[in-house]
Length: 456
Ligand SMILES: Cc1cc2nc3c(=O)[nH]c(=O)nc-3n(C[C@H](O)[C@H](O)[C@H](O)COP(=O)(O)OP(=O)(O)OC[C@H]3O[C@@H](n4cnc5c(N)ncnc54)[C@H](O)[C@@H]3O)c2cc1C
Image (cartoon, rainbow, N blue to C red; front, side, top):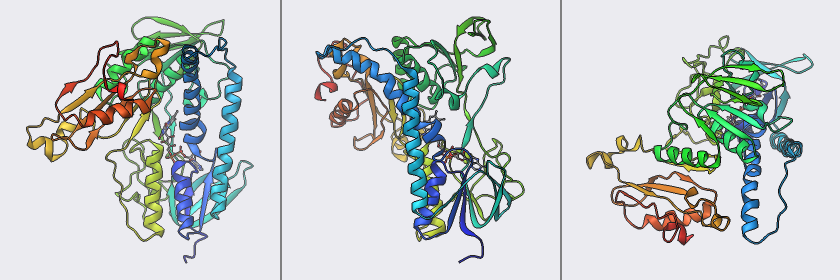
């Protein structure tokens, strides 16, 4: 046993920090964790969880439409936004308690306050009342996550970021979303689902860069069809508050939109400033993220970092996996390394998208098989009707799916999906897998007379 107070000190009790602390403690380490804001971190408090609750709620309106078509008499729905926020807050408070019990149940010391490194083995935690407590640690895990980037055009202070969107006292009737990443796309769909008039402005040619092009264009069409006003090659030049409380948003196209709220979802930056990392000898990379090696060790030998603060893949399951690797490598027997290939990801857009594997842009250059065969990786495309929604007269082409196969069939290398009726799509996709890998488009006629969806 080392002479330090603890074997592992974890800074940040978010996805990566809680997992790292819990696994290390379960392997017999003496662990302390500091959290300055909320147990569970971004995902639980202002990320995945509230976002999913909002998303389910936004889709409920469609389900009510479907219910009518299936014979239920349902009154015209009205929205009680404060009730949504209160119920969301209650669920998050429950999860905060779950995280606290998970840690304390493993004997982890939970310290509420802001932690800073004084040297490579000493952490000072400043509690909200100003009290400073120090712990020395054999190892330190930095899992401080990231924060939303705020824009810098004139009037940018009138825009909110994703941390604030979950606490809006009232649903805006007119919302401008700035950005083209998954958070911007999800929020546009959520607020449209809740009845707001939504405009999304993105400086690029098409949102969701990095996803398959056909998924992106399909979602583009579906979102427009549902009434979201998508403006690509468009930036916001300035925001000004009007006397009536609304906001004038001047776009780089010269147009002025009048909206009630603006959400800037233009990216997230690592929380690496003001932690004392320099004093402890921890190097940052050119993007301000903590630089780590293949096993998440920083340039200071006793300090490790995982999750959004290293800015590799900003997803909760990735932070969890990285933290488990660190805990097992430090206190377990197996020596583990990360594998970032085939990370499944979902976009809670409307309709939703799910992907795993290589994207259309990457796959032809990857893997010896396709290259040996002339650099051509056969694509297998199919669009599947969401049969569940036909009774309400919903556009049958809402759903879609696509699987990329090895040249002689076999395991799919990538499989993006998008639809509300996921189980139906899975049936269709499995059926198609046995048809061979020829490059073909299985888009079936819009009347839905045949197609994989019929197998669902
Ligand atoms: C709107 C939104 C939606 C998202 N949806 C998804 C999704 O659907 N699926 C998904 O996989 N990912 C999603 N993410 C991303 C996901 O939330 C992050 O990738 C994940 O939370 C990263 O985990 P982490 O442990 O690195 O950091 P975090 O979870 O952010 O935890 C870091 C913690 O460290 C604390 N901290 C920071 N500095 C200090 C300090 N000096 N002292 C003490 N404590 C400190 C912070 O308060 C925070 O609690 C979403 C993110 C956002 C913003």
